Length: 524
Image (cartoon, rainbow, N blue to C red; front, top):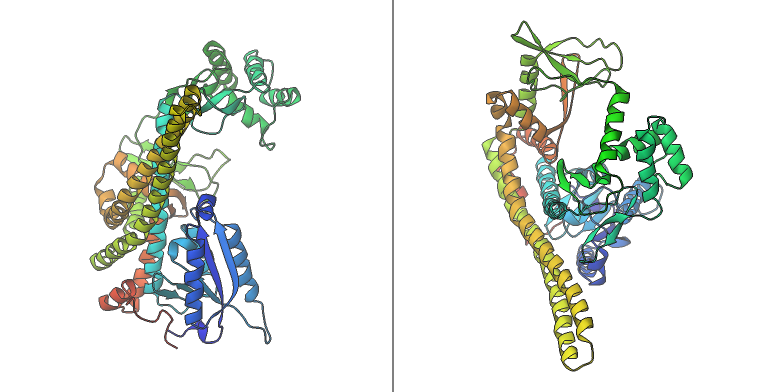
């Protein structure tokens, strides 16, 4: 591969940590920067820009990252005798990105990227197999933080089970620290009475949603969104949290917060809402596999199933937005198209084994990330324990009162419990993400065959797991895959290019397991 570095010796350094706490502790920014600048010196690069982010890379875009992208875009417009920088130095994949959107953004730049710790250099001239394996690493970097997020969600479910609302307080409430030290919600003295009046106004049947929104705003309630206040009021009036229960991720819980309205008033408002709509719900007569799963590609309405002659199932556009010319389609045709889509995810056995091996190799870097996070939490736990031990001595010596000791030690022990919970979340994420990554590859390989054999209800479950959006128009089915199947779909395309280019297994092994003692830069 011909290196861009032959012509352009200027380089950019990018370093990132995930939190301000890590930055204060000197967790990795100085170490990353030193590693990259030492590498630049050895490779005779001149570092012309330093970019740093103290922010998670789970979601697209960060201040330093965005500035760096803009710098490279401006470099593409430089002409004349000025030195052009087209080289990026970064420690490893997960320091640069942990999401597909940022990967695509960087991939579209005409630059050469040196992942120094991984011993990999990628450029526009890199072989498709090299890009493919890098894409897998991006997916695994994202998988770790997503598993950590799942563990955090479990904590939120535990909080909900205790009757504590685990999110931002809804209108009329404020987030507070309760007497037991836990975080919850309580009525806001200014806005709570206004929300109560909203229920009372609507129960009379005299006011529309828009009128109630105006009246509430006049009384001093501030709405976050101004584009559809009637919809905001509607969401408030149907929220059970105001009589004491709340719904979290599809499940109802009994809250311990103070209600703003009685259950009787809330029920009267619900009856008023239903009577005002005057709509009778339609009862489904058949369990159609794809009803409301597919959008019409012409008008955006849903496709619904219909039984003909008690034997044949056809799907058609609901036409809620007006007459639609999309013709009926047989369920067997949709099954055939979905089977083709799911089969497109399939790896052959050779690629599956090599990718699985690469995932296990990339697990080493994620384990280091996990171990460092746990070590920081352990240090904080010990710091709090030292405080408790020292204060106990102060209590014995009479320097602090027993009441003060009890108060502060209780606060610090609560903090320790939170740290232990965070450590457990990291531990679970570390154990699960590799197994899930390999398991998802296995599912992708078998998805088409599984889909063909399943009954209608199981077909629906499999599609809900793999596919996020589907559209049907003119006899053609288009789908958007959920993560990480979207990464796998791109990876399969790359593997097919590898086959066309006749890349052998030995070449693939070399891509995944480069010699660590070799010069990282491509041959000059």
